[in-house]
Length: 149
Image (cartoon, rainbow, N blue to C red):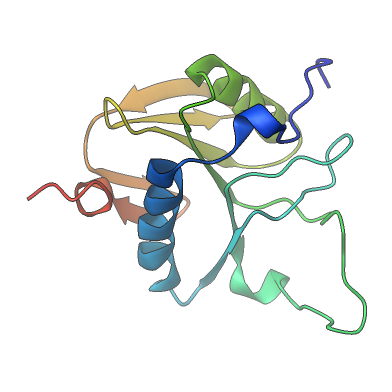
């Protein structure tokens, strides 16, 4: 890794807007029966990297309630990061780059203030304001997430 520590510290606590946006994204993702969106799952990257939401093909998730997994080795096809008041866009874009270089296909970084979605893939970064974001067959309508009529 780049020497940057990504574990949540006391100053990086998720805010109300952060939690609300994660919930709205999860509501849409759960409707897709082909995927399993998991909040706050620590991935086996470095000392552990925890996206806000990790999305897997449904068949990849088989919990064993007798033996838990602390760091999940399988990489998600999509990770979602939502900017909180105590974070910077640059911090989350750096985290997105680490996730992609570790095998995550796509990372959406959601910046709620300007309602911008940054999309990071192995091909690079781009951003969009279009409310319909789709990657790897996974789609979210951010107009609904942000409550825009």
